[in-house]
Amino acid sequence: MALRETNLPIRTFPEACLYSFDEVIQDTFLCDTSQDWEN
Image (cartoon, rainbow, N blue to C red; front, top):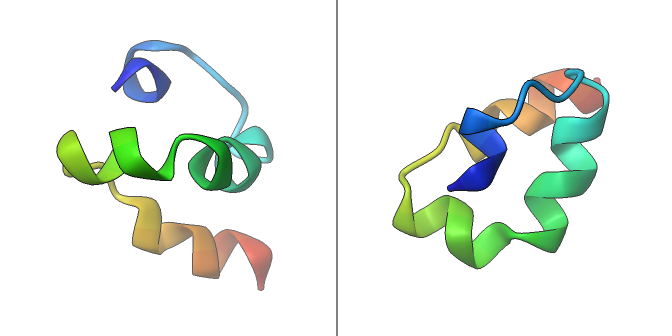
């Protein structure tokens, strides 16, 4: 939930998504887009 409010670089999001995956699901964050960032 804090990931969206924090202005983190897109490069950091995939990693942050893994660390706070549970919070991401609760906040319905676009964690799925991390696949596009990795590719």
